[in-house]
Length: 499
Image 1 (tube, rainbow, N blue to C red):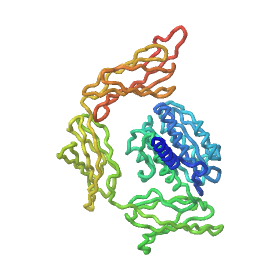
Image 2: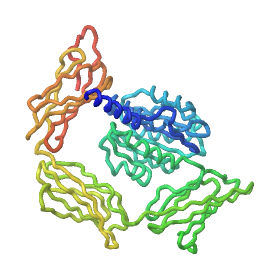
Image 3: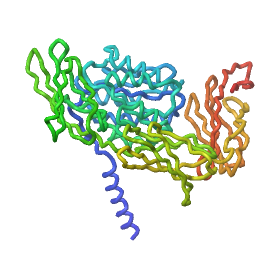
Image 4: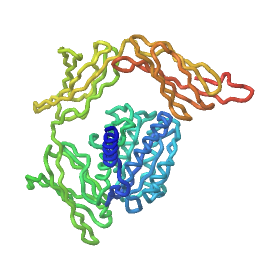
């Protein structure tokens, strides 16, 4: 009986593995794709070695089906660090195997998270022969971030998008949704992803398909579609010396409302606005060449519905008696927003009115350590209403660790101690991000207020954070940088720390 059961289990496991594991030699192939694909990789000290390795594996899986070459896809990596660095130019690796090995060999640089500098650096490299970039192909930027940057990203990111670069953002941390959605190409629903670093494979196919939509085929297509506008892009078919384009567009159900625009031959995109919501447009691009006949290109584009409920509600700045509620997108057709909130469980609720020109408000006079249900309703000028809800938690009273300090315990070893936080603490979580070596994470009981930190290399700067843990949510953490000084034989190990 036991042998029979074991045999059945073995057969079941074999079938399950065959269904879940990819079959060698049957990797998907993506034809008719041509573009320069740049990865902006957070290589700073704010990212652990484990997280950096997981992101590299994600990039390798994302790129595996593509064909690489001067007439296909080219890729490159720029490190976000104190000084931005290009790992390899676009045209160095022209086979899938070579690209896979190059990404595997990529090493973390550490340093500061100067994302704005890296974006300005990317703008230069995206359009230079020196970096192997090509002038007449789509440009795609994929930025993988833990949500933290030490400098401004808005201006350099906008310059990239103004130059025709499609921007995808993957946040593996607690990034600011409003800031990242403004940085990504529009609409953010198709260009912005929030996912834990261990769950990156979940979005691989969706992101790859979105990238393919940008770089596949040399055709007229629409991007940045809203309820009243979209941008048309097409391959370079002419120049300013060889001709011009005539663009015709009209609602599919009313061709008599056709509009005509003339565009210079050196253009490859055109933004159309003042369109009707939820309407399908027939678009025709006619290249008027003075050298030879070029056939017209056509496409159909449907604008979005005007009434779109808030697609995301974000809770931030949580305190014992208040938190901030933010939402997106903002639409001109919204007259006002209503924010309804009440404790869970319970049947009482209060209402806040917010002007339609704002997308954020602070909810105050709340009870500490309490879960609230928050509903944001958009009140449209047409009288329609649409809503979206989220849960929010207020913090414990005085839920903060105090007086984090360090004591030298010998070569490469420190003792981190702290004063206890107030309230019913369930324990403490201590994280040490080493400049050299892997990060470490400790969970200790509420009675323990110190841990030993080992393997701290001399001459390095390491970040230590202590956070109290409560029943509903973590309390406010306290972080300090600890610098391990270089040691000489005469000094021994005393006076090696400065924090």
